Amino acid sequence: MNGNFDAIRQVLAKNGSIVVTVGPKPTVDEMGAALALYLSLRDSGKDVSVVSPQEVLVEVSNLVGVDQVRKSYQGGRSGDLTVSFPYQEGEIDKISYTLEKGHLNIIVKASAMGLSFSEKDVLFRRSADTPSVIFTVGVAKLSDLTPIFNLDSIKNTTIINIDNNADNQGFGEVVLVNPQASSLSEEVANLILGLDLRLDVDSSQNLLSGLSFATNNFSNPRTSALAFEMAAIMMRNGAKRGQRTKDRQAFIQRPSQQQNPNISQNSSQNQNPNNRGNITREYQKENKDDEAPPGDWLAPKIFKGSTNVE
Image (cartoon, rainbow, N blue to C red; front, side, top):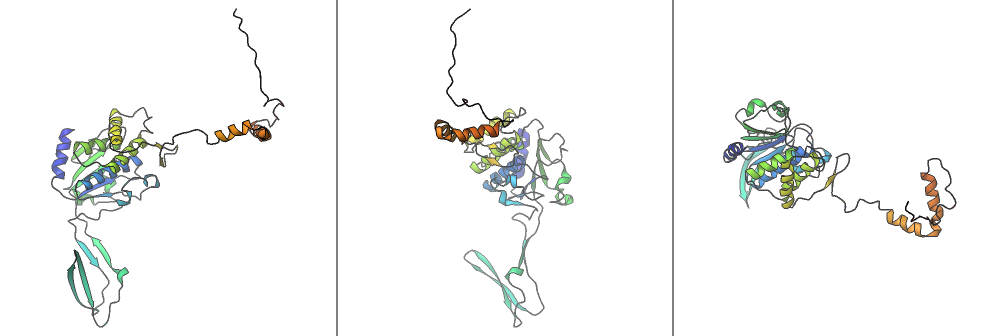
């Protein structure tokens, strides 16, 4: 593992553009791990973007940085930016530029004909230069990247394959595939710590959310020792534990009490003799045979015991 980390450090030291990508239909674990890695790389000064081949699902909308996820790779800092607009012969007199307060102003001077286009017609395109590094998180096979990249164009790109799926095809120059891991988030957390990348509370929360999802709030018997270790580190770093709802669609904070909120109200009703009719009706609703309760069912009961020992 240390040898893999050393190889990754050498690649990251080149300061090229980096892409973190997930596979089709990413879960909270996959997206939480990917976003945590993206945020840590970004906060460590790297040129990085995060990409998903499909639209982000509602269940991952609470993760920090989800608004930065793109459906395609738009190029890193080294890519060229092209400003494009419709053009008719003779309507532009000249094009120039000025520098003003840190901004580059491109001036399109209209001819006597005037300009036939408006601001909304101007397009900005970033050339898709080839990234130097691709981190795949939960991607089982290289062909899953075809919606994002032309595979021929990334032949010289270093691919770091992170997964816990036993069916992973083992592609890439650095393979971090561990079927014994109970989550991708614990693997990525261990990677971030091993690379000494910056790890703030947002990245920690994403990782803890992913861990909780993958392990069913740590109740899954397959939950690994590494998962508990990484969860403890994330919590010390400011992440908050929570629980996932039954359908695992939304992450919610654990309430302080799980009791029925109507208990105190029912208790006060029981103490008020004027509410006995209401209670009787509730008894009738709950009774499967719809039979009326005995007349003395609310009356105090006295039970006699015996102290005789035979």
